[in-house]
Image 1: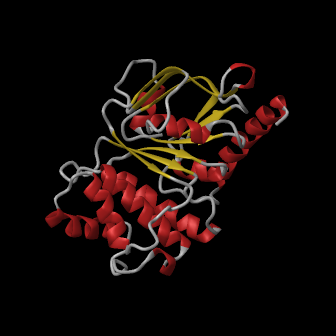
Image 2: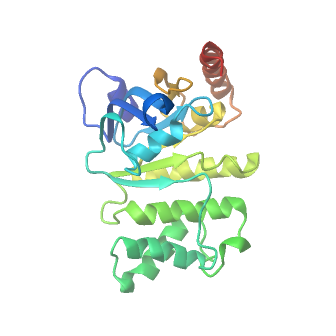
Length: 269
């Protein structure tokens, strides 16, 4: 486990990139209210890669939306310590009429980056996700994996300060590779791990894939079935780089899967 993960799990208070305290979220009101999250408390250390696991409908995506300030909690507090926050969705959601470069430049424009700097910075971001040479392509001309790389570059464009390389950036990823084939997903695992390391990002990654969580995370956080709350945390003490089919990854994934089955069965979901 990395030093960041160790700090997050220790009893000694440490600066947190994300601190959730008693967070609950209900949709609707009165008898019709649906409680999606219930008293969630969690800390993520700067530079840590944390994966969120849980059954469908347990509130994982809702939690990311709250952290990204796209919605407000019904109760509790969320502190991101002034971090620059980007949210990467399940679908790339690129503008189909814009070129790859124009999609990135639009994100830079939203940040107030001067026009004279946008092209160069967009090219640098595309190079960081290994898409140099595809600047003039449009989304429909790219594979699914390449579109997700553009989406990642756009997320970085919205948040990363080039003066610090990405330190202080919180990247929220909501099942970004779920719709991809196994080989493309495996290659993108390598890419996101490389970018996370190079830029010093803090990552909160939602997935249904237990092995993916163990492959990527410093820590795996298991949520209960609805309403979602933290029921167990698993530090991933496996040396990097990891392979998704490696024996230690499979062993820990099996342990987490057993616990997940127990939780889902307990709730009858």
